[in-house]
Image 1 (cartoon, helix red, strand yellow):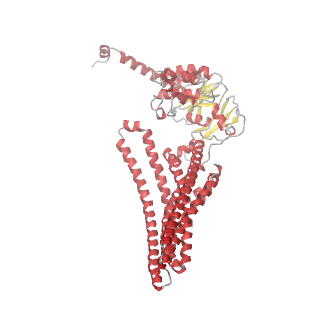
Image 2: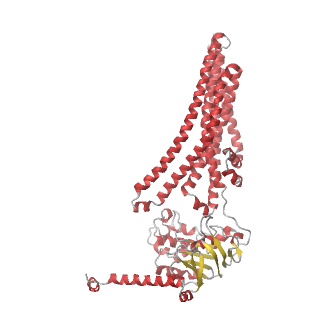
Image 3: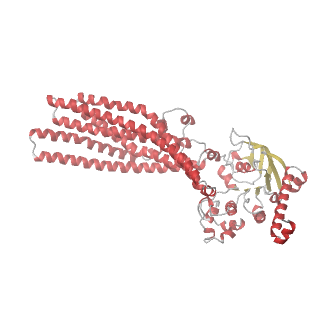
Amino acid sequence: MEAFRAPRSVLRGPHPPVKHLHRLRPYLSRLRARYAVGLSLAALATLAAAAVPLVIKYAVDSLRRGPTGREILAAAGAIVAFAGLRAIFTFGARMLILTGARRFELELRNDVYRQLLRLPASFYDRHAAGDLTSRVINDIEGVRMMTGIGLQQVVATSLMLVMCLAGMFAISPKLALICIVPMSLITVVFAVAGPAMHRRSLAVQDQLGVVSSRAQENFSGQRVVRAFVQEDREVGRFRVECDRYLQANLSFARLRGTTNGLMTLLAELAIVATLFVGGRAIVGGTMSEGDFAAFTAYQFMLVWPMIAIGWTITLAQRGLACLQRIAELMDEKPDAAGGTATADFTAAVEFRNLTFRYDETREPALRNVSFSIARGATVAIVGRTGAGKSTLAALLTRLYPAPPGTVLIDGRDVNDLPADAQRRAVGCVPQDPFLFSDTIRENIAFGSLDGAAQTDRAAALSRIAGDAERFPQKLDQMIGERGVTLSGGQKQRTALARAIVRDPAILILDDALSSVDAHTEREILDELRGVMKGRTCIVITHRLAVARLADRVVVLDSGAVSETGTHEDLVRSGRLYAKLWTRQQLMKEITAEGAEDSEKPASESSAVHPQ
């Protein structure tokens, strides 16, 4: 896969698109024997076809001499034999080349998919899922067409072109030169139209990615679309993108149609010249009927290569456009693998003067953040929405690269640690967990490093096992795409079990239980104390009652550490944490009073609140 890469300047600057072709060499070289035999068979099929006009010449000249039935039968038999050989050779060539192209497609698609799984979260922030799906499916198919049937046609049509021209010059150099004049203009047409065809083909592929993104987004969010009665609006938006896709295709088709039309016109003009000049030569006695018949046969055979050239160029332009889009993806820098330091962790965490921004156009999400977490300690990170709490979790799990020397585990820069080993040591449960369209058990076991032996225990600790008892298949119940058949709390508890089952040295709960009630959250955390014992735990939460369970609380405000200490110390300080605590306590009291009022008899309510 490394051979597929090229300097970014090759991709972004103005350049002939054929420069990307070298990227295919590693794949095609593994299939060189298959391609060599297949292209040889294609060449033999062309030679068999090129021999037919010579048989026609022999048959027509025999008519002037008064042919015997044996001569006519021999000529007919020879034509049938050459046709049979051409069919056999063509079949063999297509089987070898097209199956080879399918193998090439398989390897390329797997490499592209592997690259996608290695790219950092920032890449997915910039690209729509539908566009990436289009590259993995449609663009790779376009490259496969170019390297399969397209490559076969290049060899077959080129050889046919040479053989036909050789035959025509052998019969009549003068007449061949006259015919070549209009046909040579075809090269000029394609030289002018080629770059425009590439640009329009690339526009078609880009817009197809937009259409795919729009459709995928609406399929995933169809419940929201229907809940807000936005079906007609979304259909309209999809229609707009489809219309743009149609216009891009029509623009490409108009250019291709114009090019093919000009090519056909030039080919027909060559035939007119042949009839005029060749007919006069026969009348003048300088050309035999057999020569004219053979010349005309070669010329008619030459028309197909001219047409095939247009089709092949279309395939090539689309293939090169697809290859360029794949190259852009493959040249994205994957996650750094990290250094070769040992993968053993005692799980002491430190953030040292950490300032981080997601890109240069945005304000820093974190500003000069510094605090440490001792091995085995439980630290709660709290703060207002947008304070940067989840960003700390993203940096610790290496979803985004941290500035050098700012995030450390056991005193070692995370950038110097093997990324895979570090991620195996960190179990993170996000607020919005992603579940696969599989069973609950398989979703939990997805995080296991040594099989699913601890799945049941993890399910019990996260309290998802109790809910699963109500399902027909228990933990083996299939859930919908992204866990759509589960409630928000059930999805979070399934994700929590998935993190627990891998027995991480560092456990991060990023508002992981926000969809369950506060009482259940505290019960789950109480049961997790046994799991959390001996490992470093970071609990990101908006519920300060949960923060009371932590050994220490870190308060973030506008991306910076506002204060740190125990719950009791922070409440006494009277600063931001104390204000947040007071506010939550007041809301709790108001909610409780509202619940009591709703439970009073109607008569009592009327007495208290007279109408």
